[in-house]
Length: 324
Length: 249
Image (cartoon, rainbow over the protein chains, first blue to last red):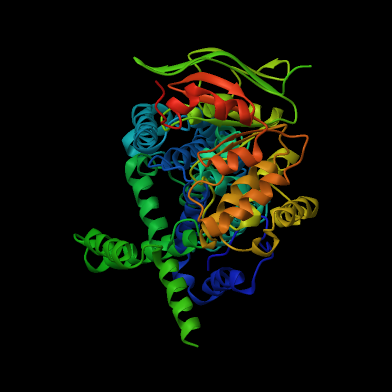
């Protein structure tokens, strides 16, 4: 599942990389009663992809990525509920711009730091955004959340239905676009530069790379993708709650990515899928203790599969290959 | 004619600790110059000030006629200063090709591109492979750096710096830690470095210094003790006393 990137890598899409898309389309037909959950999973995969771009490929540690997800969700929600803008593509565009600008502004500060300082700053920014959303009740709905979000049919033709069919396909389409963009970036010279910065920042400075500027670009792109994911959530749920901001969604996202495998592109697919299905199942079976199951899963992955589920699969495939 | 690189009264201190005192130094165009001195003399600190990794407390660094004292490392590289590190500073998990291509891409101005795949930049690959070939690394292009013997890793250090097409090349102990069996490979590469590049080498191995350098500067306690040819340095009693440890009454 892993593949080298850089000047020696083959950027063509391999057959195995089409598997998630075939599976997603198959799920649309085979599991019609789970399409709402499916749309949520697809949204979180897009969100996780944005985190993987900066954490996995550029080595930026963050616990505040929900700030971009949240601003995307609130911008789309507010534009629709308060200003009557209901065109879904326009809402996504506005969310991406707002999240991108927030990414530039906050990245300009946090990317001057490293390690724990950086981590704390990202956390502080997410907490600030949460508090602003909490206090600005007339605009955001505060603790009650933002309701009254109305979304027009996509391209004037596809209305959001109660079974979640349109939402699922809309999320799938945007995830595909996000995946294509992220993959393109990873295999580009810019992606190779990000990997270089992650591997050895001292050397990157010594070969003339404007490290800060490159990281800021990656951070802003990642923020835009996260913003689109947030707007997608607002469009498909037609409601925005405070739970899109703060530490909890950031931490959850980090757990999802670690579960799937950081810096593997498809870890961002596997992590949210496993996490959200487990959450759905465990919350139904053990409403009070479902977090225990998630915690146990994370402990097992960290102890026995340091590269996440995909890392484990990679290891098994490599071992099987040697035995043959 | 202006020297390729010059420092004027360069000083550096960390609080009360003075590590460089009024270092005035000239590296002529096309020079083969060695900087020697005992451990802790301030050689690497000096190189770090030349490259911009460390900011001097006072004094000037000039590249040709341009004052680059306050320029960032990246800007100095773009103006033609390349360096290697005393301790390997490589992208260990990347291929040899990628290690060198990253720098070549930055120089060619393609490293910030987002669309065309990295491997699609054929001219860049071609140039990188040609450079690796001149250093005898062509067969290792696809190997991960971490899987190479140490001597070859030192060559990758040099290849990365050469990929930047520097006017001035600062080699910080290029043969350090290399087993004697592999050091010949490094020396052959040093001998073949392009004549037009001004090279400053920091080296403890006197065989390497005397074979490579036409001019030598001795640094002791952050100060220039003396400068001269091979013969002048070896016959200087201060050098013998301080650097070679010989007692003179």
